[in-house]
Length: 269
Image (cartoon, rainbow, N blue to C red):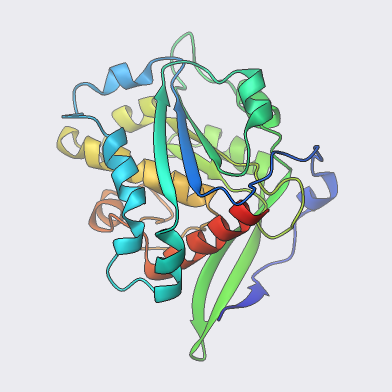
């Protein structure tokens, strides 16, 4: 049993949060759709380090989360009732699709900050607004305090985080979770953006390990979409250091517990 505590007070973003109409309900659905949009064909740039299809691998990874060693039985029972589908599209999402995205849709955008089709700050903000992302959301972390599990949450300034991400060339991706803390219309709003050009240009990521890093980054950002916060020396490590991301190819048991809680809330919303 987890006790919920707050790590820090809400930011001023709470006062200026965007408010949108409700999104499609979960209705008890048990299929998670990870939708990867690649309008600029960024995957064409990865041929030098991809030795096979990574999206089926990613789908298998999520479908096997319930088999993770040591996973708490309650989380295991929840996760094995869900299925995951990874859908790759070499196009942009349409406005109609974005309007219909529901609680079980996890849209991921492959982008670039270089060249004539570079993603600009205003375009990135418009993308978030088109997905009806609120100004404030929360990430979660389970810690042991005096032998008791505590579910800690902290606020995240969505648009401030986006600006910081785009302005820091060491950042390759950003994942924004739904507002799982509040049972309101922003529950389903989530998105991830991965900048492929930064992955390729990063001098610390050798060609021989770029494939593993790409998969790890996708897991990391999708983890954020489930509400996971940064946690050192795990797949949710706070920076894109090769060691922690590659040597920790899956989520920790506490992280899996948070994912199971998020899925339960999403599907029952």
